[in-house]
Image (cartoon, rainbow, N blue to C red; front, top):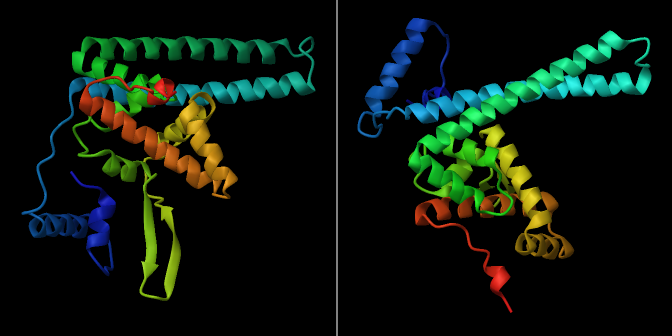
Length: 251
């Protein structure tokens, strides 16, 4: 199993597109890479179920946010007395969506607890200040229990937080930047974790403030913190020991 974009870009200059032509191109790609590609290993039943529930939860959270926004607009511009039906319907929908979201979260918790390996990984990730349960679940799901990626750097590239150089010879000296090819959901979760860590983790807060005072970019600093958190996540899972805040022991 490989990304369709990888096959498309490996073809070079092409013209025309039909199912028959696409099948031939995919077969040609597989033949040329037969010594490099490896068979895909199916993910566990628990991981598949976690992914489905996370996807459903995300949709319900988005719908609830929409109803909350609309309800807020009603409160600002119209009175409840003459528009009771508008208010009551939105409030009932928000209440029901919240109930279903909590039901999904309980189910996710049960799945994690039923598997000793997933439970241990979940607890280890949550031992890191700034990283929450949702981020832990998404990372476990998309790393297939930390079996899909050899290192945190490869996963950082997958998430779109790894910086890449942009230069050629002596004429092109572009700034180092992250790629737009990324898992945007995990990237946004790591972004929220980084901003939370800046507020709650004294070590990362000091690091952030020190870089900002020297004139460094805020976004590049936040991206460094995203990478720091991701490296800690992989470290605690590989070590199988919770994260230790060494700064707390400094004199």
